[in-house]
Amino acid sequence: KNQVEQSPQSLIILEGKNCTLQCNYTVSPFSNLRWYKQDTGRGPVSLTIMTFSENTKSNGRYTATLDADTKQSSLHITASQLSDSASYICVVSVHGNKLVFGAGTILRVKS
Amino acid sequence: GAVVSQHPSWVICKSGTSVKIECRSLDFQATTMFWYRQFPKQSLMLMATSNEGSKATYEQGVEKDKFLINHASLTLSTLTVTSAHPEDSSFYICSAQEPTTRGTDTQYFGPGTRLTVL
Image: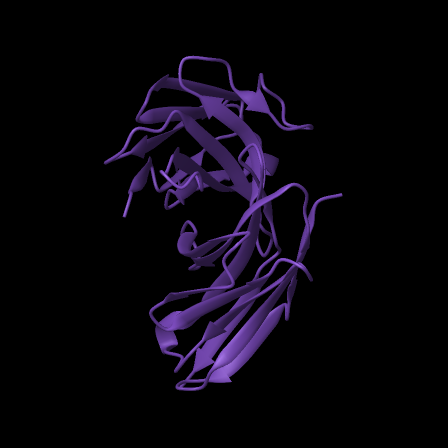
């Protein structure tokens, strides 16, 4: 069964601190892995997308890693800001364009 | 980046009425669009895949006669919730797929439509 599991479920950090979100997946056949940021009441916004051969991808203060052997990915947020408070969703694409969504990690950045 | 819009952003309706939600890709052509539903504190659940000019493909458990999907053009798909009931209250999100040269087709999500059925 295709599954994407994210940890932690929720996280609270102080503004300016770094954090790392985890994603484990059992999806086959794997096409690519994406991280999205979803603000409350809004649609998801793409942060990074990585194919099988890519190990890391950065987008500003966001850096995603992918280990296709262990089927793990992480999203590292550097120097967090209050506006980073959101749900971060790991999504794995199966060949044929179907997306398998993780449940998301709710991040709250406090001042 | 590519922009996908939805209209309306929120709607409140009476039980038994029908509600139409529009999804538009503003600066690219999308042969495939997707409709999702999201309940509070849960992730997105795919309802159906919409291909321009053909019938939508519905996920298991989604009633096609209740959730009517029309993908009349390469930039517009509509979802009509017919005879809405309070349990249909949810956050409906569409996405449009833009093919890329690398083969990593990217889905761009709309901002969502909050439906509340009284």
